[in-house]
Image (cartoon, rainbow, N blue to C red):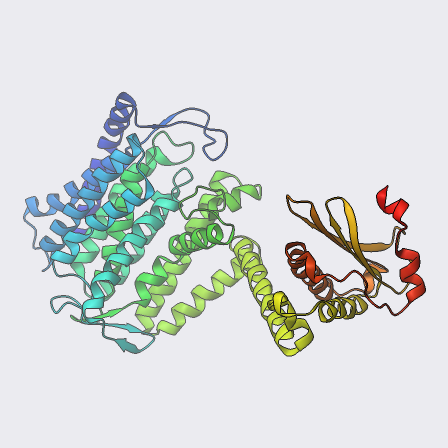
Length: 509
């Protein structure tokens, strides 16, 4: 406990001292965040590079306990060196991006390169030196060489999760501080004292930085800080969750990081379903949702911090009671409650429901078309005689309660053929529906199809869609092959056809 307190206060003092220096340096070199009136709503430019102070304070805290000469637990030195090198590379990458914005693809590649020291140190999941199997709800899974991409994916995911959640004063710092505190408690209970020491150092560095980062913030973490926090938490989540020397409980790191990882996953899903690039900025993150509901920055900060503590408490409870199911039940229940209360995630759930409904509708239409040979003719219009095609259109129009269906083929301004199926007069009432399609080409060939009817409330949407598909399919085909349309078509009501056929004078007009 003495060592934990010492490393925390050394990092705290270093962060309090170095943050003003980092602020002045960022202002001098132009690494500032300027308001744009859309996503960046601060009143004046705010310097970035707060992550530099956090990283240096973390390293000084780790080195301070070694300089004092205390009896340190085994594995602390190696863990400190790996974190120092990897986090230093990430911090440098973030500093460059804060000053000169990089493309998302280049930044992702550099993030993957920054976690290589962790893999080279033999701490990838599946290695003999670290973990050769993971445990999920009592089931062991051996990864083997798949542990390398799994480790890289986990660490890069944590880096970007904290990077995306850093969109409000003090938010990433509060999330990082609460998560580090929970990981220190879990690591201590499992006997991983070296992990608890690093978590205490990170907590001290963030606590000192929060003095300057709480609303209204005088300095931002920037990518140099949020990515460092994500990387360190990702490493500590793996190392602090080892049940034995070679077995990792995947529940603890996943549950502890639920809120930032969920925010990242929903952001990717939301942008995919709305047709945007996955790296397109938007105002759909959890803190944006809370602010849009009229909450103040402090209120949103307290709610998100409480959610992180709740998921962390679930992970701690799973560790104490040796029950992964307990952690998942609490966490999934919390997520379901957020969606039910429309706090976060309800918009993405609505998008998924719409996509599922659209997919089911398309599947139903395919089944209906395949079940009815008369509807299947739209798949190959060139193989269907005109009489059969026109009969299929009439049959579908009858299902839609159409009163009037008409085909008009015009060549070079002269009407060549007009076919009418009429069960009543063309509808001109307000309470009526109409489907009209025209197809033409440069040499003067034009095919026009029209269907009208009364009482649109009686027409099923999928029936109307099917009629429109038939009109579109055969209309475009007959426009391309006008020779297939006969000049005369026997009608069920000849007197109607004669009345509908225009005189030469009217045709010329």
